Image (tube, rainbow over all chains, first blue to last red):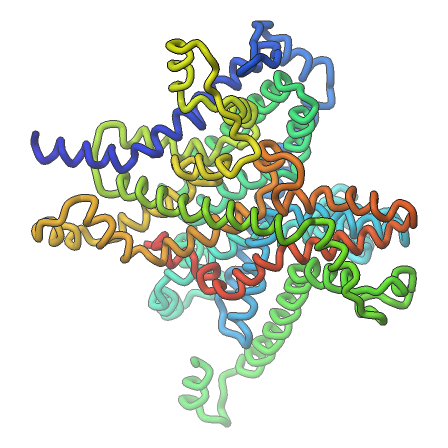
Length: 289
Length: 328
């Protein structure tokens, strides 16, 4: 056996647990989901009994209940907006946290806190609780922090109603934005720290303003992380359990409507994959330029 | 820095035209930055402050409109209630067994797979890396139903079916509601966000100089021994980071446990239903506020171990990306 062959066998041995796991815990279930979505399911003695029904589940899920399709489309729209907001916000905050000021390390710890809490059930409960209390006292609230002053101020400025509502949505969602930017901030922060100080000095000597040195030094250096962050945020937002589509799938499974849940989640997954792929292709082309 | 240079160069009396403007702008910017950060930090800390403030309230304060943040009558009543209703110590022990065990296994297995992908060349490696990325992108919801079936009627990857053909009886095992729901995928490198961890380790090992291993090989070190006694000790930072993240995600997970575990076996599940449990207890008093207070105390109890871990491992979290060598 040549050395090369031996090494490739050793490499396969190192990856073998993953290959077994991938086949049995990912690939076969994925194929099964495709089958389920075309079948009706009965609980058998060991395993499910499938009966082929063609496109019936898709018809029931998407044509007979118009809400479902609308839900998926609006979820994609929401994801696009919130990804842009989260990425811009986390980059902005990372740049600020990268500056020198008193209490910088404490600030970094505070903004890393969402990483350990945000993925849990606590935020769901907290929202329910705070909103319940708000509803009892004042007018109905849909988000934890709300600002009516900003709305009036923007209207005074003479912005169109649509823009005002857009900004209102952003401002009112500040809680969600901050709480879902933990990992993104850390990623950007370490990207910023990897930029050598000499690049900024060179830019300064050449007479670049702060604005120019951001666009011509910081931004290009951070952009590989931008791609990572955007894709991470897209996946995180799509698969977030507070997402309406996710909750719908959850409730379908709890109601033992496996076939519909399979059809629903499959369509959703293909759309997610398309969005991720599209973003990846566009961003990669931009980065290569 | 550059300000001092400028002032020494130009002297105090003939400072450049924009000097005072620049100085004012700097001060204004500091004020702006401080207020922005304090405001955002308030948003981050708000849930914890809210939980503390609510959970520490005595029953006299429930309907007192003057109590907004600081309770007048402190009481640990709600914590006692929540500990009892959550069956806290037992549930926490079980959750800890799941989280610590699964994340240790996960870190080790993901490192092994990542090492294999980073250092060895073999046919289909690119395909495997693509598949790893695919496991990150596909939401758990897509495959959760067949996974449920897999665990409910676990057949040891086909061996039971084979035995059934020979002996004629059913050998499948029900794995749902056992720790194996977490341990098995961790062992096979397909646990909670394993794909991400494999990529992290792959990137870490790629950053290692090849010469360390070459020296070890020349000294007569085998592949396995080289991995365990040279590679792993050098990647300890990446290990700590992956372990901590994995621990936190296992601890918080309530999607998998909601599907594959039953009842209130993990803390997240117990917390999710705490409101219902509590309202059963409080129903004779019909007091929604008492219920909410109890839930907030429960929330604090559930994240308390996480906060402790975060407090001791904050450096690992904040510097996680640098520590794993993701930055080239």
